[in-house]
Length: 160
Image (cartoon, rainbow, N blue to C red; front, top):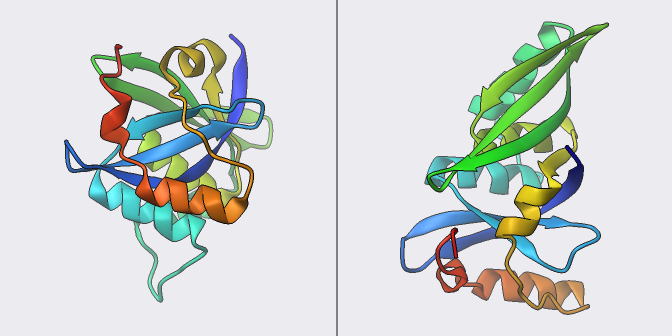
């Protein structure tokens, strides 16, 4: 199983479904992998990307604190599969020589990875099968503008 590292390129709103979508991009690819997520998870991801924090920890901040208190680290997040338009992921934790795998929704995993500074990985075949082309341009400000204006509804069905 070959894994490719991806980064969060933004959050968009699917105008048709009225759901947020996290946009993942591999460094060596021009395409984006959209994953539809819940509003709370979109807020958690956006908060981490924006570098914002709150006086009291939010759920994903609390999870990161628990991992730290237990003497473990978030080694990586792996997005591992897709069934019936639902992505599956796992959190890989390490404590000394022990490695733990925790099944998770991709959105929760991504929110935790951003807080822990852990890499986001996805199976190469899965990424290639479901990535969508969008022109990100070369100017970073232009990229931000395009992502804000992006309508993931135009990506069509995941199985298309």
